[in-house]
Image (cartoon, rainbow over all chains, first blue to last red; front, top):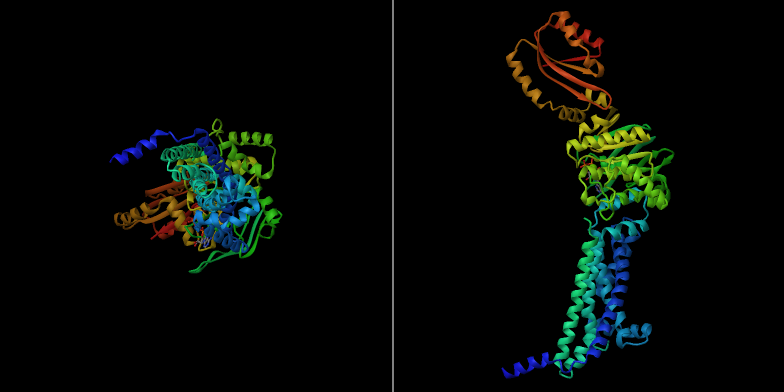
Length: 230
Length: 339
Ligand SMILES: Nc1ncnc2c1ncn2[C@@H]1O[C@H](COP(=O)(O)OP(=O)(O)OP(=O)(O)O)[C@@H](O)[C@H]1O
Ligand SMILES: [Mg+2]
């Protein structure tokens, strides 16, 4: 009982917490999440639109496109993130020049999250009323116009809530990446909180991560609601 | 204006091969409001979708103006669609755009500069009676208002042909009449050719000049609307006409009348247009000194003429009857003996 109480008061003492280090780690986490979310948004959107268009089209050439894209998306979605990081080490080294730190984490983060977001995009696009797409076709719109002026605006709430979920998942992924060498709050919690047995640092890292997640969720919900005129 | 020549459309599905449109040929004049009526599954939507190339015919040719739709390149077809626009049963507006932005959409596709788009949209908003609602989103409009936006949107590129796929089927009767009235005004004003499909005979009656009746992918009857109503020849047409006039009650009453007046003949007197306003019948009645019981009567309004019929019971011998029939025939009034 006493031991438990001791652990508890250690946790809330904050005597080991170096706030400048926490700040640095927070910036790293936000930076990794922001950059990874940005690229995931673009890659996922492109993949999702390819999936949607090639699935619905009766153009014979589109079937293989759908097959290959769907296969890659499913494959990378199935690989656990921690294994993906290890698997991508040679690739990361080649394009980023390092496997450590924030830079080293980005390829795995983006490659891990894009397929996930691509599926969310595809689901969002499938919710669009087919009649509206057909109406645009009946006005003489080409595929490009349909993508920009129909598909994306008409699925905007789903695209936003999808990227919100993905960004939150990415915060979690940055923490995992942190454990094996990327910076950020996960790294702080593991390297300092766990290996040096400073549980107050772990607690602070946790709280900051929760705050980041809540802010993302709040902003995402707000935006999704604001654009929804249905 | 529009020529549909021996057009077939087959769908192969896993379970069966379906002939949705079966050897259809139609000619539609410029400036005409042409109706296509049929029960569900008759192939109406498929036919109208062939007209703007949303579907390709399995065989046959569809010509609008100088272009054979099914032979145009993809690019030319997109160009052509700007002049062959369409309105839909469920309006198919973009919820993410305001009324004004929805109406400008075809103009954006056509690459019209922003200033012109705005001006054109404003004109159309006034034309369809939605002034003051330009900044509203579709979700803030009633069904009738949404269809007005749909119509304005379809007109924005100044099309020559307007295709309407069940454009009023989601609307209540009053709103239906308003929208039909609007379509007719637009046709008169812009000299549009309108092709309209429906499963409601009164839509045909109210605004169409000519109509085709479809069943199982085939056109079973084509003609002037008045003619279809007065002398429907195919059983499907008869059923539609009957549903519109609501003959069920009359039939019921006729059975009773036969019991009440066993010696009387029951006549159906049919009349059209201006004749329905002159006292021809009463003149003939006086002339032959007849007695009659009026059983039921009906007058319906088509887009340019009224027509109707009168059921009467009278005691009359065959010889006089023939004279009466001849006398009335002089005034284009038809008499049928019901037995
Ligand atoms: N894409 C398709 N694939 C297979 N069959 C189809 C397809 N589109 C239509 N059909 C079939 O073609 C026939 C005609 O359909 P269509 O939609 O033209 O009928 P409709 O007259 O418009 O009916 P409704 O009044 O219910 O709209 C139906 O049997 C339908 O099942
Ligand atoms: Mg239909």
